[in-house]
Length: 166
Image (cartoon, rainbow, N blue to C red; front, top):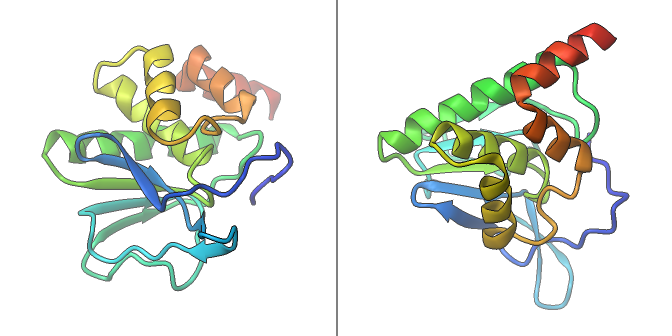
């Protein structure tokens, strides 16, 4: 599920490198005339983490692919746990020097959530990681303020709180 109510434009690029070996992207990008262009991943990465899925967008069958459908909205405790697990997968791969792409529809929110958490695992402070993602990907990255709250609270604490609500 994608919520497009914040007025963000489609990104200009298919993906952007946030730090060496860790990129963030989406399934669509803006073409030269403003048209939506599908982003198809082949073998450019060793690991692809997809938080949104569209048939025909890759990656190639030889690429390690982790796919968990995560909404661009309030998350359950189980979904927050999935985000933590995927961030750890990205962290482990980056530490091993493997090229990782974390993607969602536009490459702004869900992918930003996982990438920031991976950066935290790699030693970044949350605010610095959020700044880095917005600087390298787009000023529109993490425009879902609930996701920023999850990150600043701590995903483990957010999962516990979400468990109390459900």
